[in-house]
Image 1: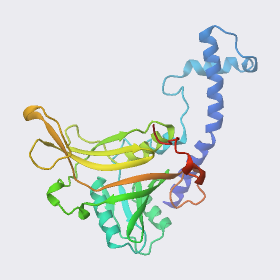
Image 2 (image 1 turned 120 degrees about the horizontal axis):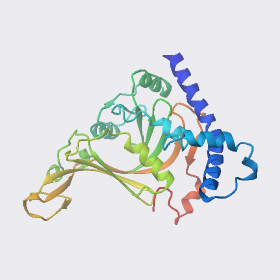
Image 3 (image 1 turned 90 degrees about the vertical axis):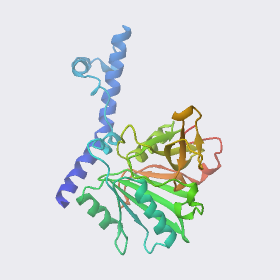
Image 4 (image 1 turned 30 degrees about the vertical axis):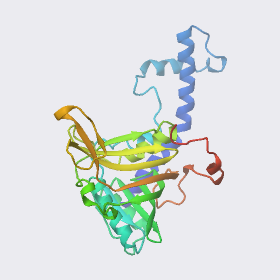
Length: 303
């Protein structure tokens, strides 16, 4: 198993090293393709390579014309099987953190919760690789309040670090009649306002934590971005009743309501790494810097 992981990691790093060469070759082909389409002469610097490049262009199709990146490889097999997630915490978790992770287990389908104990991160990651887990989710706290969550995709990354704010669990809601029953059905996802390149990257990390749902499922999970704060909530679609509800559509007997079931919280992205959480030497793809906190008018994830 160790030799296999080393071999796969070496192949992945090699594919990453080829990206620059493939991008340069793609730009050369693009210039020749544009020159031929517009009836312009071939650029002078490409005339010696024109014959070989035109032969490659003739053999390409829609799938091979654009070079793949390491980001494509990270989730290349995501559609072949449902995600399998391990949930754990920092060491010696408090009662509120333990309760929050218990509720997260029902949020993510096919998730398994593990007591951290004395295990180190590298041991957890190695065990998850050996048992075909697709993601590891670690939840941290500060003085009994959940304040951070790390999502690490296996086997090679990426790893996203989020801050947790305004956490409200089902356990914290006193009026139990005001919340719906927790369903374990595969949910529909609503990803709102992830319009920038970084926003699309973040949405891609979040959506691959959930399997493909059935068309008629009544469970809905929302990730709504506003000013780089991602609001998370779970809704259940029900027929119209006179009970507490969040949203109601008037339209006779076929009208519907959306009922919040909890938990709810906000996420704030502050770092994305290209490796797994145990790799301290992994390249940082994006990280929030102190001076970025003053850029009020600039939004990194969406409009």
